[in-house]
Amino acid sequence: MLRRLPPLALIAIPVALLAQGALPPDAYEVENARSGYLYMEPPTRALQDDTFLNPGQFIVDQGERLWSTPMGAAGQSCASCHGDAATSMRGVAARYPVFDADARQVVNLETEINAMLTDHMGAEPFAYETPELLGLTAYVSAQSHGMPMNVDISGPAQAAFESGRDYFYARRGQLDLSCAHCHEDNAGVKLRGDTLSQGQINGFPIYRLLWDDVGSRHRMFEWCNTSLRAAPEPAGSQAYQELELYLAWRGRGLPIETPAVRR
Amino acid sequence: MILRALILGLALIGGPAAGADLVPYVVRDGAIDAPLAGTEPGDPARGLALVSDMNNVSCLICHVLPIADEPDMGEIGSPLDGIASRTGAGELRLRLVDSKQIFPDTMMPSYYVVDGLVGVDAPYAGTPIYSAQQIEDVLAYLLTLEEM
Image (tube, rainbow over all chains, first blue to last red; front, side):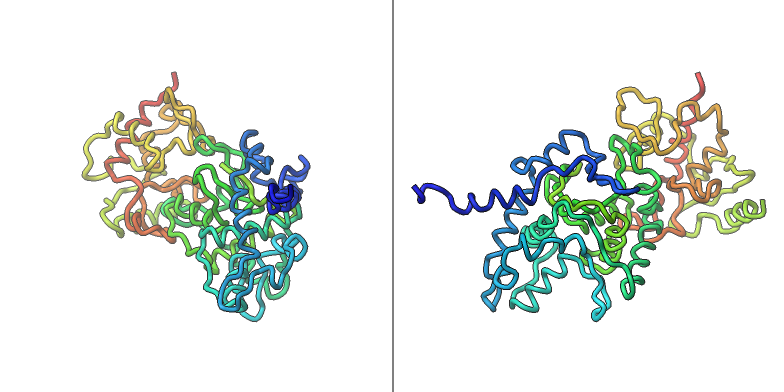
């Protein structure tokens, strides 16, 4: 009898249910910050809300498997030190990115995960948008599902925060537009056939219908830059990390929705 | 008033010709009255094709135009139906070429400018969104949009 049951699935399903699914209807708007969820059509929202249909769920599952897979020369997995992610990673994504005062730079989840691999596990870092880095980032983020974004911009982080804010308000590209022109001045207004959102980042990594793929926050920044015919910054660059810090602060209080489904 | 004169003055002195192949033009009273140099008369049919081209910064991204079978039009800018009855050809030409000379804070892209832009992606560096002829073609189309 026992052999006929898939034990991993029995364990994984309750964890996934805990981490995913619909939030209370009033959770998606906090003061003036509105989650991208509210700009989606009902079928897109339903896709996100259904743990079993959400097409971003597979990358969370992939991250979950990787979490306990030994990687690198030290023969250790994430779980070797961090144990059960549901406990050890709860709330982490809500307070990232952080400012590393020693290295004097912003560190997002992807950078932190790669630092663990290289500095503690004797492993190579994963590139942006690989299933491995997306998976671990999504799995760690999903442990904060429903928790409000709450980054620290005080003290040494302030200069980086201001730099990210400046990026948000600076015109760039052949179209000579800033992030704010669309996502602050015109959120809720139709752009071509779509409705502009506030550009909130609380759902990443997201499954994006336009991409038919999962993508990171920095992939979205690259996409926006390219739409303006502006040269994108490299994923993982400080410019994007600082922008990410600013945007996380701008959307403070919005719940982590990973893996969100967006247009 | 002084600012406006300064802007117009800069436009006259600096001109757009510093980059690439942009032709110089004269701005007077918020308008470019003469067709851009070296162009043939604008063709409204070509202009209509251009404003509908989603691969080339289409007007429809932000504006509603009276085009049948076009359900997805943006609403960021003002509707352009009847624009020719409200705005003269010379002012419309300047609005296409470089609307920031009239409205410095506008989000409307300048379609015939290469200087002063930051971080332009390599394939577009040094080139305006529209050529001088494309400006004239789109203008010719817009001038057909009169109040019924």
